[in-house]
Image 1 (spheres, rainbow, N blue to C red):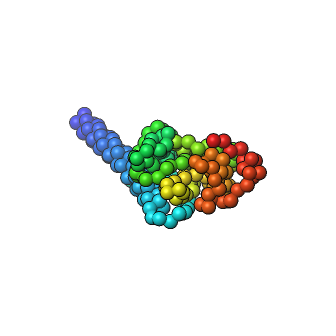
Image 2 (cartoon, rainbow, N blue to C red; image 1 turned 180 degrees about the horizontal axis):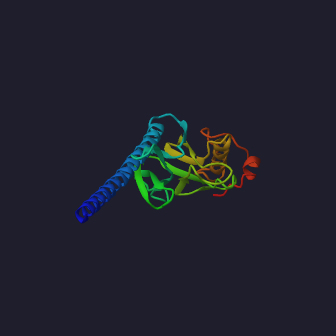
Image 3 (cartoon, one colour; image 1 turned 90 degrees about the horizontal axis):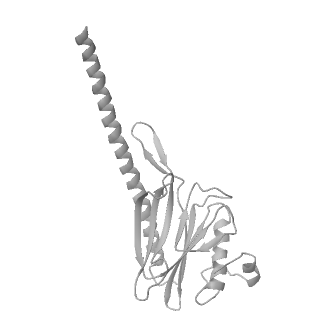
Length: 227
């Protein structure tokens, strides 16, 4: 009787150990799968930018909407969802260094651990890079800054899940503008108009670019543009 009990106990220990090993393996595999899918995403965004800025066309524009989550197979259950944030950065942060390329960087991080970067893709560009961040909790807050964030789960009037990419050639210089916005109707156009006002007031030189919507001084004064 004692031998039978011990054999059952040993079997239970073996099953528990096997379950722990398999669970550990699946958790590690899940991290690898999610990281690989995230890497594919940021690489695709870099390729989109590269395709946009290359060539001699004076103006080109593209709008990109990122998915709400990264979907993956969890192993023990159906499709799972990884919620994330995407950071878009320029290097050097302060802008142009004469005679050097500028770098545009895409990074994906866990939404729960926002400093945990799981995927990065960068692209060196012979372009001036301007990034316009948008606070989706206030339609009136847009700032030109060295780092902006897209967050498909952001609170506010609309999710901050899109970006407008504008390539401009002006005065022999290539310029790339990345403007955070939302796939909600009219918001990308509205933020693009804000960027046009910023360019008309803060550009080098200030101007109404043919690559952006035409704006008036009165229209821009109501949008609270700051340099």
